[in-house]
Image (cartoon, rainbow, N blue to C red; front, side, top):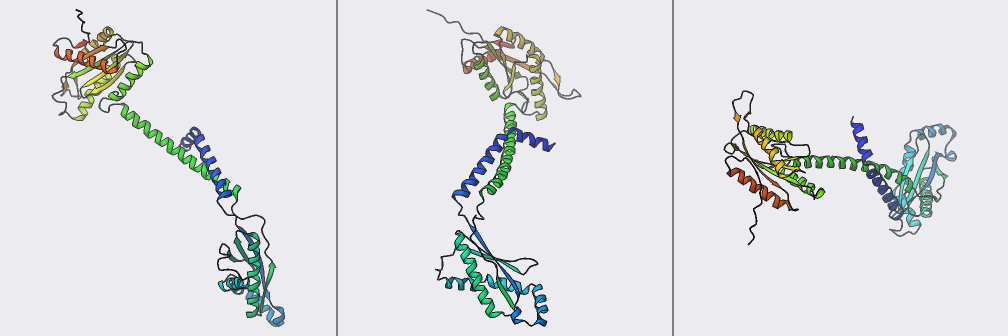
Length: 373
C-alpha cells in the first residue's frame, strides 16, 4: 500500500523529479569542467627477487622462503615511499621546496606477488611520470647499497597517462543523476506532505469546530464569490439569533454546547436547498446565504425553519436536560448592486427588529420611504 502511495506521489510530481535530476547533472558537469583541476596518476611497478650473484645455491631456497613471508617486500615498499627517499630525489632534481607540493605518492604491495606498485598523482602527467621514475631509481640505488641478498628493479617504468583519473564528467554526471532523482523524490514527498498539511489547515479554518458549519471568514468568502459569479442575480442573507440559551452558554459543558450548535446546523442544512450556505456568524448567531432567492420567499422558508428550531429537544438520552430555543431571524435582500457591508448592516438591522418584536420572529428588512419635499 505504501509503495502505491509513493508511486502516486512520483506520478503527480514527475516534473519536480525531472527538474532536480537535470539541475544535478548540469551542476556536476559545470563543476567537473570549470572548477576541478584534472589530476593524473602515473604508475611504476617494481619486482623484488633474490640476488643470484650474491647467494650460494644452497641459500637460494631459504631466500625464496623468506620472500614468501612478505616482510622483505613490505620493507622495500616502505623504503620506496619514505620521506628520506622522496626528499633525496628532490635534492637530486634540484627542485624548490614547493615545486612539487601538488603531487602525492602512494605505494601498494600486490597480494600473492613480489610486485610493488608505486604511483604519483598530480596535475601534470609528464611531471608525474618523471617523479615516479626518478623516485623509483633513487630507491633502487639506495636499497642496493644496503641489501645485497635481494634485488629490486623496475618491472614497468612509469609513463605519462593520456587521461586524468579525475574528474570523470560522465561518471560523475551519472552519479549526480541518481542523486538528483533521489532529491527530487524527497522534494516530491515533502511537497505532497506540505500540501496535505495546508489542505487540512485550510479545511480546519473553513469550518467552525463547535457547530461544524462554515466559519464566518469562509462564509464571507463564499458570499463574495457568489456576488462575483452572478452579479445580476438576486440573493438573500439571513442572520439567526439563538435566543433562549444566553444565560447558560458559558456554564454548560462544552459537549452540550457542541450538541446544541450541531443540532441547529443540521436542521438548517436539512431544511434549506443544496446550494444554500450555512455559517457560524458569532457565538449565538448563524448566517444563511440563499442564492437566487428574493426576500419574500426567503422569509417564508426561514419562518418554517424558525418553528422547527423552536421545538424543544433533549441533550441526553434520559431526557433530563431539555433545551427550548427562541430563534430570532433577520433577513435582507440584495438590491441595486449594494456592497456586502451594506447588505450585512441591513440584515443586522432586520434582526434587531425581530429581537425587539414579541411576535415577529422573522423580520425582512424594509427600506425606509424617502419623503420628497
